[in-house]
Amino acid sequence: MTKASLYQQLKQDIRQGVWPAGSVLNQQKLSEHYQVSRIPVRDALQQLKAEALVVMAGKASLMVPPLTATEAEELYQIRLQLEPMALRRAFPQLTFSLLGQAEDLLHQIEQDQHLSAADRGALNWRFHLTLYQASHCPHLLRLLHSLHQQVERYLGFQEISLNYADTSHQEHWQLLELLRNQDLDAAIALLQQHIQQAGELLTNHLRQQPA
Amino acid sequence: MTKASLYQQLKQDIRQGVWPAGSVLNQQKLSEHYQVSRIPVRDALQQLKAEALVVMAGKASLMVPPLTATEAEELYQIRLQLEPMALRRAFPQLTFSLLGQAEDLLHQIEQDQHLSAADRGALNWRFHLTLYQASHCPHLLRLLHSLHQQVERYLGFQEISLNYADTSHQEHWQLLELLRNQDLDAAIALLQQHIQQAGELLTNHLRQQPA
DNA sequence: TTAAATTAATTTGTATACAAATTTCAAGTG
DNA sequence: CACTTGAAATTTGTATACAAATTAATTTAA
Image (cartoon, rainbow over all chains, first blue to last red; front, side):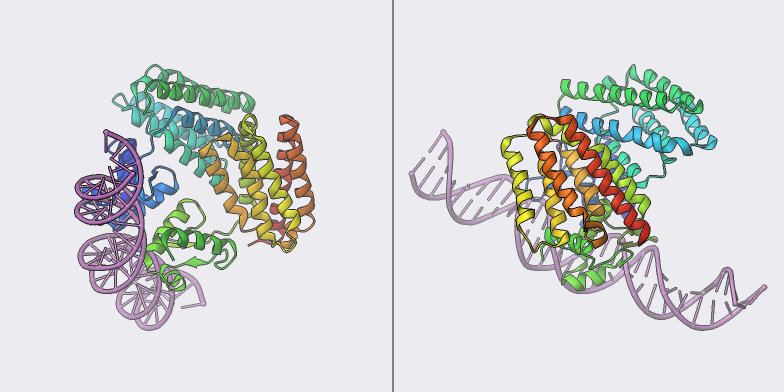
């Protein structure tokens, strides 16, 4: 387990619930679990801490942060500001190649029958990122990636993905169509509605099933 | 030099140009300079890396990132989206106590005669933060803080601060006045103009004096 | 019984030493 | 002369050991 991959692995394990929300992550436990010394564990934790994927719990201990409905709403409000901005800045530089790549991802989601909710979520997000990448705004993309990671953990639940998967997927096709037709305003409007809806779904879920 | 303070110190030293843009930060050099072992240096660097206050330079080395005019513009565009949002969400929860605190900061800027450009910049930012804090949006505040840190390094230059200091300061008083009068829309409009102007000043400076 | 204080246990923070990787630089080749 | 190649030097990555701090458990006092 090399350093970069320990960071990746730990992040993935947090995402997948190996270390659930509220877990206190102590260095020795982690170093034993991943069969490395505490030093690379510390390195990974420092990075995760700076990204708010783990948070302080007390004076020195770190934990996987529970996400409240209020926080989720906040995160989606931020995305509601930034993702349209990313799309607007990407729009003039969208190539056929890029739109094709995005379309490929949508086909992939349709074809792969045995896709877990998590995997489908990852592909959906890659669809968004593929479009945004044309903006050539590294800081904006970094922020969006970071914001997405903070909620990613909660997107696998049945209550969220069930029934919504289809709607969301159809909206992705619509978005692609609007972009192909050079209708930026409509695309932005659709994107905003898309994000708002996803946000409401998550916050409602969190309000019903706190923690 | 304890761990948290090494992180703070290193950040401050980057801000103040001890390690200028483009500098490669190697661990041994830093550990000797700060009289600590490489371990706390690594911890601090990991955190700074995750905040984009240092960036990879090659496969393993880290450096203080130069800021291009394009990036500065990007960062200010992001702030232009998020700071109005922060003010909007803060507005209903702004107390007289908080507005008083903000006013105190403005008085402090006026009274302290021998204030460096950096110190004045820090107080100005604390003025903004004081208002935004009423929003009770931890993630938004964290982002804004992070965004500000990325440009802070460049705000001390004469070309930027000279002449603009007065304008900026007056706008802060205006902003406070509008908030006291419960005129949110005007406050937002002023804030947007305020940020835009600051952004243009910095990007123009960077275009003239690259690196 | 509760709350504060003290001690014991655990956990984090740091230094040193060594392994693995990267970077540099010089020699060799076309 | 540019371009590889390869070894030397530097630098980063990791393990172990120990110091300092935090957390917990236990005792003591109100």
